[in-house]
Length: 215
Image 1 (spheres, rainbow, N blue to C red):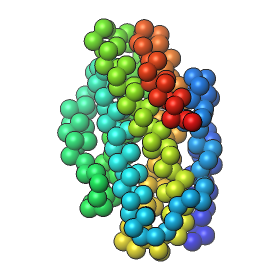
Image 2: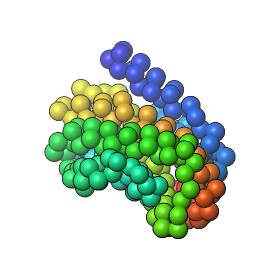
Image 3: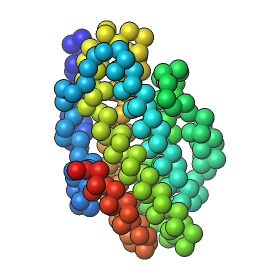
Image 4: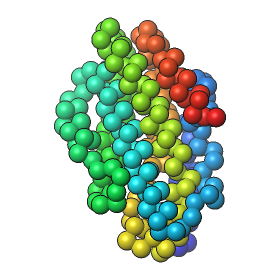
Protein backbone atom coordinates (compact mmCIF):
# COMPACT_ATOMS: atom_id res chain seq x y z
CA UNK A 1 0.00 0.00 0.00
CA UNK A 2 2.88 2.37 0.66
CA UNK A 3 4.11 1.75 -2.88
CA UNK A 4 0.63 2.43 -4.26
CA UNK A 5 0.39 5.74 -2.41
CA UNK A 6 3.78 6.75 -3.80
CA UNK A 7 2.71 5.90 -7.37
CA UNK A 8 -0.49 7.91 -7.08
CA UNK A 9 1.35 10.88 -5.59
CA UNK A 10 4.00 10.75 -8.31
CA UNK A 11 1.39 10.63 -11.07
CA UNK A 12 -0.49 13.53 -9.54
CA UNK A 13 2.69 15.62 -9.43
CA UNK A 14 3.49 14.83 -13.05
CA UNK A 15 0.23 16.39 -14.20
CA UNK A 16 1.37 19.88 -13.27
CA UNK A 17 3.95 19.82 -16.07
CA UNK A 18 3.41 21.46 -19.44
CA UNK A 19 0.25 23.54 -18.97
CA UNK A 20 1.63 26.75 -20.51
CA UNK A 21 0.30 26.17 -24.02
CA UNK A 22 -3.20 25.39 -22.79
CA UNK A 23 -3.25 28.49 -20.61
CA UNK A 24 -2.25 30.61 -23.59
CA UNK A 25 -5.43 29.65 -25.40
CA UNK A 26 -7.77 30.16 -22.47
CA UNK A 27 -7.94 26.45 -21.72
CA UNK A 28 -6.64 26.70 -18.18
CA UNK A 29 -9.96 26.00 -16.48
CA UNK A 30 -11.06 23.32 -18.90
CA UNK A 31 -7.79 21.41 -19.16
CA UNK A 32 -6.06 22.19 -15.88
CA UNK A 33 -5.51 19.08 -13.81
CA UNK A 34 -4.91 20.92 -10.56
CA UNK A 35 -7.99 19.32 -8.97
CA UNK A 36 -6.53 15.83 -9.02
CA UNK A 37 -6.88 13.90 -5.79
CA UNK A 38 -10.38 14.94 -4.71
CA UNK A 39 -12.52 12.82 -2.42
CA UNK A 40 -15.84 12.53 -4.26
CA UNK A 41 -15.51 8.88 -5.28
CA UNK A 42 -16.71 5.90 -3.28
CA UNK A 43 -15.30 2.39 -3.09
CA UNK A 44 -18.72 0.79 -3.50
CA UNK A 45 -18.22 -1.93 -6.12
CA UNK A 46 -21.20 -0.85 -8.23
CA UNK A 47 -20.09 2.77 -8.28
CA UNK A 48 -16.50 1.72 -8.94
CA UNK A 49 -17.60 -0.37 -11.92
CA UNK A 50 -19.53 2.57 -13.36
CA UNK A 51 -16.54 4.85 -12.83
CA UNK A 52 -14.14 2.44 -14.54
CA UNK A 53 -16.52 1.98 -17.50
CA UNK A 54 -17.10 5.73 -17.84
CA UNK A 55 -13.37 6.43 -17.72
CA UNK A 56 -12.77 3.85 -20.43
CA UNK A 57 -15.55 5.33 -22.58
CA UNK A 58 -14.11 8.84 -22.24
CA UNK A 59 -10.63 7.69 -23.21
CA UNK A 60 -11.95 5.79 -26.23
CA UNK A 61 -13.78 8.92 -27.41
CA UNK A 62 -10.58 10.96 -27.05
CA UNK A 63 -8.57 8.30 -28.89
CA UNK A 64 -11.05 8.30 -31.78
CA UNK A 65 -10.83 12.09 -31.99
CA UNK A 66 -7.03 11.88 -32.10
CA UNK A 67 -7.21 9.53 -35.09
CA UNK A 68 -9.75 11.87 -36.73
CA UNK A 69 -7.29 14.73 -36.38
CA UNK A 70 -4.47 12.57 -37.70
CA UNK A 71 -6.66 11.80 -40.70
CA UNK A 72 -7.31 15.50 -41.25
CA UNK A 73 -3.61 16.33 -41.20
CA UNK A 74 -2.91 13.49 -43.64
CA UNK A 75 -0.14 10.95 -44.15
CA UNK A 76 -0.73 8.86 -41.03
CA UNK A 77 0.27 5.35 -42.10
CA UNK A 78 -1.26 3.71 -39.03
CA UNK A 79 -4.66 5.38 -39.55
CA UNK A 80 -6.58 2.58 -41.27
CA UNK A 81 -5.46 -0.13 -38.86
CA UNK A 82 -5.96 2.01 -35.78
CA UNK A 83 -9.43 3.14 -36.84
CA UNK A 84 -10.47 -0.49 -37.15
CA UNK A 85 -9.10 -1.16 -33.67
CA UNK A 86 -10.90 1.86 -32.18
CA UNK A 87 -14.16 0.80 -33.82
CA UNK A 88 -13.84 -2.62 -32.18
CA UNK A 89 -13.17 -1.30 -28.67
CA UNK A 90 -15.92 -2.20 -26.23
CA UNK A 91 -17.75 0.47 -24.26
CA UNK A 92 -20.41 0.20 -21.59
CA UNK A 93 -19.34 -2.92 -19.70
CA UNK A 94 -16.48 -4.40 -17.71
CA UNK A 95 -15.82 -7.31 -20.05
CA UNK A 96 -12.16 -7.25 -21.09
CA UNK A 97 -11.87 -3.62 -20.01
CA UNK A 98 -8.15 -3.78 -19.16
CA UNK A 99 -7.37 -5.07 -22.65
CA UNK A 100 -9.61 -2.36 -24.08
CA UNK A 101 -7.78 0.33 -22.15
CA UNK A 102 -4.38 -1.02 -23.16
CA UNK A 103 -5.35 -0.83 -26.83
CA UNK A 104 -6.77 2.68 -26.45
CA UNK A 105 -3.67 3.89 -24.63
CA UNK A 106 -1.37 2.45 -27.30
CA UNK A 107 -3.32 4.10 -30.11
CA UNK A 108 -3.61 7.38 -28.22
CA UNK A 109 0.14 7.62 -27.66
CA UNK A 110 0.88 6.77 -31.29
CA UNK A 111 -1.61 9.31 -32.63
CA UNK A 112 -0.35 11.99 -30.25
CA UNK A 113 3.22 11.43 -31.41
CA UNK A 114 2.12 11.69 -35.03
CA UNK A 115 0.20 14.92 -34.45
CA UNK A 116 3.26 16.51 -32.89
CA UNK A 117 5.52 15.30 -35.70
CA UNK A 118 3.14 16.65 -38.33
CA UNK A 119 2.91 20.04 -36.64
CA UNK A 120 6.68 20.22 -36.25
CA UNK A 121 7.03 19.67 -39.99
CA UNK A 122 4.77 22.68 -40.58
CA UNK A 123 2.93 21.02 -43.47
CA UNK A 124 0.22 23.26 -45.00
CA UNK A 125 -3.39 22.09 -45.08
CA UNK A 126 -5.69 22.22 -48.10
CA UNK A 127 -9.36 23.22 -47.96
CA UNK A 128 -10.63 19.68 -47.39
CA UNK A 129 -8.14 19.10 -44.58
CA UNK A 130 -9.09 22.37 -42.91
CA UNK A 131 -12.76 21.40 -42.85
CA UNK A 132 -12.02 17.98 -41.38
CA UNK A 133 -9.60 19.44 -38.84
CA UNK A 134 -12.11 22.02 -37.59
CA UNK A 135 -14.67 19.28 -36.93
CA UNK A 136 -12.18 16.83 -35.44
CA UNK A 137 -10.81 19.47 -33.07
CA UNK A 138 -14.20 19.77 -31.39
CA UNK A 139 -14.30 16.05 -30.62
CA UNK A 140 -10.67 16.19 -29.54
CA UNK A 141 -11.32 18.86 -26.91
CA UNK A 142 -14.51 17.15 -25.73
CA UNK A 143 -12.74 13.82 -25.32
CA UNK A 144 -9.75 15.36 -23.59
CA UNK A 145 -11.78 17.32 -21.08
CA UNK A 146 -14.10 14.37 -20.36
CA UNK A 147 -11.11 12.11 -19.74
CA UNK A 148 -9.44 14.71 -17.54
CA UNK A 149 -12.52 14.94 -15.35
CA UNK A 150 -12.25 11.24 -14.51
CA UNK A 151 -8.72 11.37 -13.09
CA UNK A 152 -9.53 12.52 -9.57
CA UNK A 153 -12.25 9.93 -9.01
CA UNK A 154 -10.33 7.00 -10.46
CA UNK A 155 -7.33 7.89 -8.29
CA UNK A 156 -9.53 8.00 -5.20
CA UNK A 157 -10.98 4.58 -5.94
CA UNK A 158 -7.54 3.10 -6.62
CA UNK A 159 -6.31 4.16 -3.17
CA UNK A 160 -8.21 1.17 -1.80
CA UNK A 161 -7.64 -1.48 -4.48
CA UNK A 162 -8.49 -4.40 -2.18
CA UNK A 163 -12.09 -3.21 -2.10
CA UNK A 164 -12.35 -3.51 -5.89
CA UNK A 165 -11.82 -7.25 -6.11
CA UNK A 166 -11.26 -8.38 -9.70
CA UNK A 167 -11.64 -4.79 -10.92
CA UNK A 168 -8.51 -3.61 -9.13
CA UNK A 169 -6.27 -4.30 -12.12
CA UNK A 170 -8.33 -2.11 -14.45
CA UNK A 171 -8.45 0.76 -11.94
CA UNK A 172 -4.73 0.62 -11.24
CA UNK A 173 -3.92 0.52 -14.96
CA UNK A 174 -6.00 3.66 -15.48
CA UNK A 175 -4.24 5.40 -12.60
CA UNK A 176 -0.91 4.50 -14.17
CA UNK A 177 -1.66 5.53 -17.76
CA UNK A 178 -4.43 8.15 -17.83
CA UNK A 179 -2.45 11.05 -16.31
CA UNK A 180 0.25 10.73 -18.95
CA UNK A 181 -2.33 10.60 -21.74
CA UNK A 182 -4.01 13.75 -20.43
CA UNK A 183 -0.74 15.63 -19.90
CA UNK A 184 0.37 14.75 -23.42
CA UNK A 185 -3.01 15.78 -24.79
CA UNK A 186 -2.94 19.10 -22.96
CA UNK A 187 0.53 19.88 -24.28
CA UNK A 188 -0.50 18.97 -27.81
CA UNK A 189 -3.72 20.99 -27.61
CA UNK A 190 -1.94 24.33 -27.34
CA UNK A 191 0.27 23.45 -30.30
CA UNK A 192 -2.75 22.29 -32.29
CA UNK A 193 -4.59 25.57 -31.82
CA UNK A 194 -1.50 27.48 -32.97
CA UNK A 195 -0.88 25.20 -35.95
CA UNK A 196 -4.50 25.15 -37.11
CA UNK A 197 -4.85 28.91 -36.70
CA UNK A 198 -1.71 29.44 -38.77
CA UNK A 199 -3.34 27.32 -41.50
CA UNK A 200 -6.54 29.35 -41.43
CA UNK A 201 -8.63 26.68 -39.71
CA UNK A 202 -11.66 27.99 -37.83
CA UNK A 203 -11.23 26.63 -34.30
CA UNK A 204 -13.78 28.91 -32.66
CA UNK A 205 -16.25 26.07 -32.07
CA UNK A 206 -13.58 23.94 -30.41
CA UNK A 207 -12.55 26.91 -28.28
CA UNK A 208 -16.15 27.40 -27.12
CA UNK A 209 -16.35 23.74 -26.15
CA UNK A 210 -13.16 24.08 -24.11
CA UNK A 211 -14.35 27.28 -22.43
CA UNK A 212 -17.81 25.90 -21.68
CA UNK A 213 -16.60 22.59 -20.30
CA UNK A 214 -14.21 24.35 -17.98
CA UNK A 215 -17.03 26.02 -16.06
